[in-house]
Image (tube, rainbow, N blue to C red; front, side, top):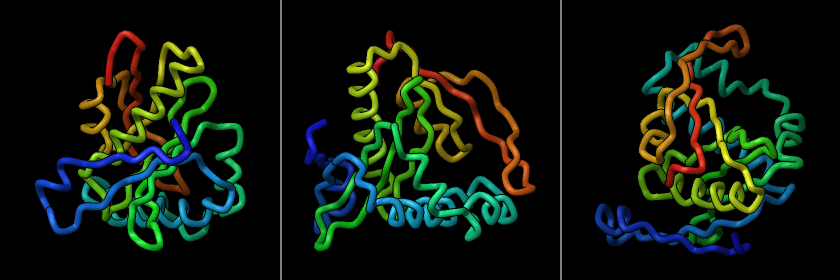
Length: 182
């Protein structure tokens, strides 16, 4: 991925021609951390709320998250950040790939859902995985993100329950093998 890869979305043009925004993908910068944490919390609270009860959303997107520790998790990972073309640019999403093929966090802002942002970020993740020679990618997808990952060729391994700040949340372990295409 070049530092400023532009991405356009035909879905945006079809749904809202007057508000077409270009999306630019770029590498993560350390000063992105606070904005990405805000996007993470806001997306869970506004998007994932349709699939999880309020108590689980409160635990998952807690205001008690240690921001420094949360941001340190970006170190030694391939992280792509999507920004829109507004002035100043707004973060539209982020996705990260660990060296072992684990896709840890993929979040698209509530204001940029269904505009091709997630697909563009996953294509950048796939390109990086290919560059690294990874044969398998895997993710623990939320119930909300399950259809998105399925549409990209990820297969379900198993549903699981995980604990988060005293709440038990269901997610789905999924994988993508190199023989499949996004």
